[in-house]
Image (tube, rainbow, N blue to C red):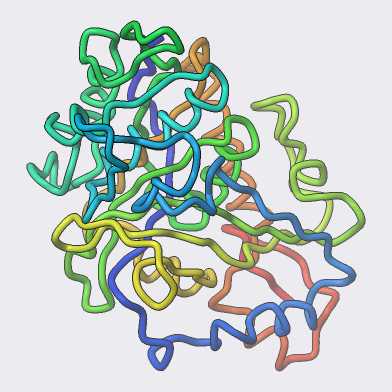
Length: 330
């Protein structure tokens, strides 16, 4: 199943963060939010294998081995190789399949170069991933050792706005458990490499979880504001730095960002970000487009604008209403 390049979105991370440049402090953002929301219900949306160390698979089944049968320890990987390894974990768990790491490492998996339209993550990159997952590539084999296609289809979409990108990534995880890849910038606006969105945490007023309060089911059903104020509490990302090297170690490559931080590093200046993710086979372009529009409308109508959070809290106003673009007004 081939997914067309409809306008869908994703999330990103960047180079190392300097908390001194951020407001409010990442550590106190949830506490500030609780002063505004009445009894929020929060939920963390996650891709599968979000807590796996993709760099050192030898200690976790399935074991990926080199041609001599030795456990494979990677010194780094591009975002395309990360995507292939994630798919290998899915295939091994669901079908008992195996993954040839050496064959994958020698392939033309998408990396930081060449840039396509100014982006590292591109629709062309998703096409390459689908080609590499065909049986004839020899990267994936079934439980009997025969070449196989592990299923699913990588697709690409675009999103200008960071809040809507965050919501779409959460919906991707809710519906399909897929990672989402996107370009980033550093704090000076320079190329920040690529990030993979691993988790998104949302909170909404009331007793219902965000996907219920905001009517995520059935897909594309959203036609009004959420039942309560919605907030993006944080996003967890792993990054592929300026050299294209993946890292997801504490104080190294993974980041938990509040909405202000997230908006600061989303995409490259002046270029619409392309988000790449992997719905299951059979997902139609119309379904993906409906999810995109759900995310954009929720972000526009119901999501707190983090730039105004301080002002609201200082004003002491809790009976606030949402205006255009999710901006709270008292």
